[in-house]
Amino acid sequence: MFDCGDGASLDLSGKLLRLKKIFITHADRDHINGLPQALNMLGSSGPEVFYPPGSGSFAALKRFLDVFDPETCAHATWTAFEPGQKEPLSGDWMVEAFKTQHFLSDDQDRHRSLGYLVSRVVQKLRSDLRGLEQEEIDLIREDQGREAIQTEVIEPYYIVSGDTVPLSTEQIGATPYLVHECTFLDGTPGGRMGDHSVLPNLLDSVMQAPLKKLLLYHISQRFDPEAGRASINEECRQRGIRFPVAAVFAGETVDDGFAQTVYEP
Image (cartoon, rainbow, N blue to C red):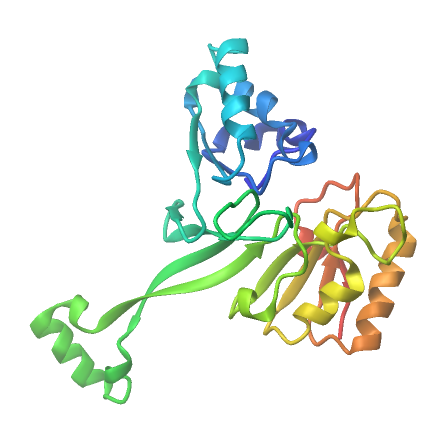
């Protein structure tokens, strides 16, 4: 799970009991208010909570929960997760943290907000063997073992941005799927836009990335979903965005966010 806001336990229902790891992007209340309930319901299964190392809020929350609910919440493991650090998931999957820009006052060495890259570790044929016939490759494998013909490759799959200014094309790299916050759909005054993403700026930042699909989330509840979808579609069309864009609005609970397509090129 990435972040654990209000109602997360209710939304997940029975799926919550399969939860082993929770990755928190930052300590704003709308991203962590569901943690006490989730940890209580998970009880002695002892989930792992990973959080930005520069935030003191998580140590304080742990101390409170250890006293307030020692029979359940105290079983959780809390880990400060450094940018660049990797954590294995089930199967061949893994999560890597990277620094984001949500708290603009943070210096280079303080990390209070993180994004997460989910990748898969796969075994592929060594590049120097790709020109050989299959019979030759089979002979090498039989003589020297499978390790002699394969190399481990980490393939990025999707990114969860957390709250941040728009990620750059360099940060996205070759990742095909991007889940990016889009708090503001326009420049409406009254919001703290400096540390969140605004739709036009976000699209300008990611439009050259080799994405297969973009999912917008964390959209402010001030935006009506119907009008918001029309606005996203129009902004994408004006820029000639080359990949599909989906969106999930405040209050919506869906099984597959990427299926909520609002724009097709």
